[in-house]
Image 1: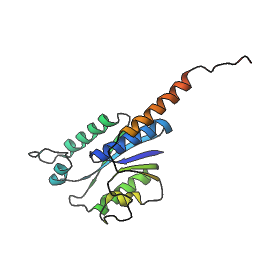
Image 2: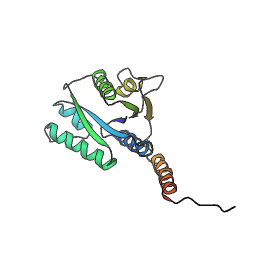
Image 3: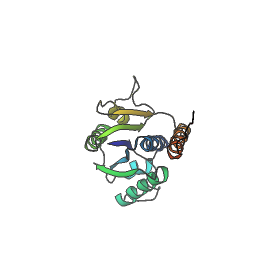
Image 4: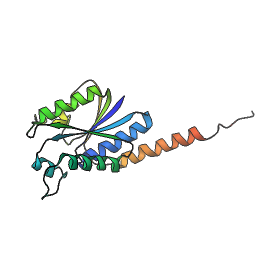
Length: 172
């Protein structure tokens, strides 16, 4: 079973990854961050902060930067990327994410999106399209607030401490 995070390196994707890692710790489930990379699309890569203004597109560079960012944000998470055509529309990206979710036996999807799941939403939103699937539970991260994950980690630490402490015995 897998907790899946569509990952583009944005602040909301980072928050989604942090939350997924917290849940993964508690539920003892694998966390997988997946980046969908439009092949050889320099403008897309620059807009997402994967490349500098003067850098040419090199898939290995993009993949390593994303992998490094995932490791920085959630060291326990795994990372993988999938390629799509250079000018792939959002629907193609969403379809690729849905295929990954199915192949990885995803139980929960953590998506960072300002508009995923809203009643009034953009037809072209990748997050909305992926979140609409009924095969897994969806956690939508709309606010970059990792403080909530801090609270989850504190509860997790308390649970672990309780599990490690020897049981007390009552002589009543």
